[in-house]
Length: 150
Image 1 (cartoon, rainbow, N blue to C red):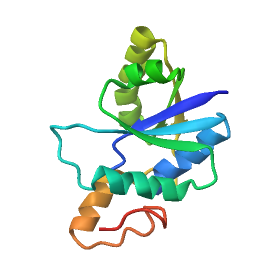
Image 2 (spheres, rainbow, N blue to C red; image 1 turned 60 degrees about the vertical axis):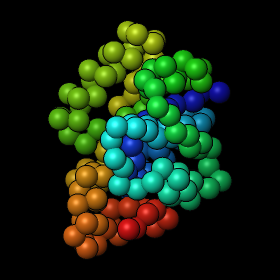
Image 3 (tube, helix red, strand yellow; image 1 turned 90 degrees about the vertical axis):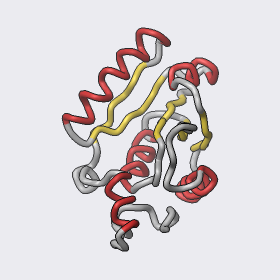
Image 4 (cartoon, helix red, strand yellow; image 1 turned 135 degrees about the vertical axis):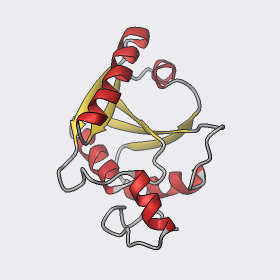
């Protein structure tokens, strides 16, 4: 069984994230959505709400949602996962992700597969969604129907 890890903070989970998972499911037998927990960083949404929102997006699909607080490469080794999936919206994302991918390959033997974001979602980021929420903006076009709205 080919399994891919899709790591991120997903604070919140966006339609862009959902699209990457669905595309990854066409390549892999299972996708593990791994929510990174950074204890020194304050999240906007509680981890339990993020997990529930992501679960609601993928009911009946071969997607598992977990949380973790270690290096992503270490998590892959522990779970026997050889592939990481990352969505890339632009060249800035690519340059940032490229360095991490090389490190994960060299230190942990884990390959990273980059999926280009669908253009209709390439402008969406969790940061923008959080800012809209804080200012009362409409986020319905940016988050899955089953996702969080604060």
